[in-house]
Structures are given as structure tokens and as C-alpha cells.
Length: 136
Image 1 (cartoon, rainbow, N blue to C red):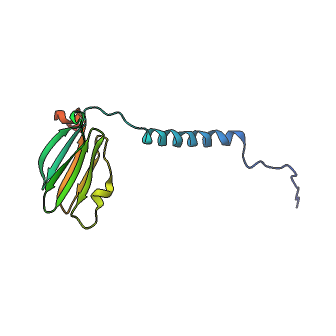
Image 2 (image 1 turned 180 degrees about the horizontal axis):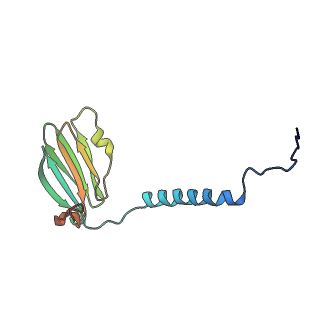
Image 3 (image 1 turned 30 degrees about the vertical axis):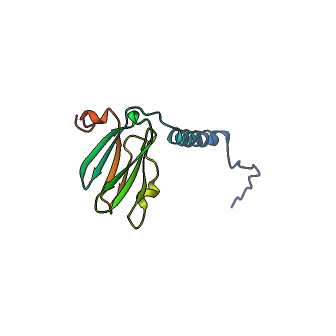
């Protein structure tokens, strides 16, 4: 039997191995930057619903001064509406998940207080035109 020893060292990484790794790292960094970058969305409308029925719609561009909106569903909830977005300030609910949601400020975001049966969803002016993106 011939057992020959090969004294050549094998490199663990070659330059060609670093190229896909660099592409992956760059993609992740760009994705994070894109997701965290502030969006300057115009034409947002807050659709506020109480007990499943639309209570009011507020165009956020038209809001000059932030104001609170007190809603009475099964419990009481208070929304803060500003040109920057909408958030629950207080609620009578026991877990306060709605308050901990924080400010919603992008189209498609929503916040819900289930015990109070109050919800708010932000839609863009394109969405409020009544055209569903899924209906072709």
C-alpha cells in the first residue's frame, strides 16, 4: 500500500469564497438601511373604527396641531392624532398592548385595542381610491 503524504497546505478561505460572503453582508446592510430609513409618505389617512364600524377618517396632512380623540367602545381608549402618525395614549384595557404598540406612521400599519374594540389603520391616498391591488 502506498501512503503518500501531501505536504501542501489547504487554505480554509480563498478570495473567491469571500465574494459571495461580501454580497450577502452588503445585501443585509442595505436591507436594514432601507427598512429603518424614514419614509416621507404623503396623503396618509387614519381610518378609526369602533366596534367594527368606521367612526372617522382623518387626513394626517390636514392635522396642524396634535390632538386626542377619546373613543368609547366596550372600554375607553384615547388616540393621539398628529401629522406624524397615530398612537394609543391610554386605554382601560388590562394588558395595554395597544398603548405599547407606539406610533404608527406608514401606510398599511394598524393598531388595535381588542378589549375596547377600537382600531386604527393608516392608508395612503392611492389605497383610499377604492381600487384593490389584488383585483386585476
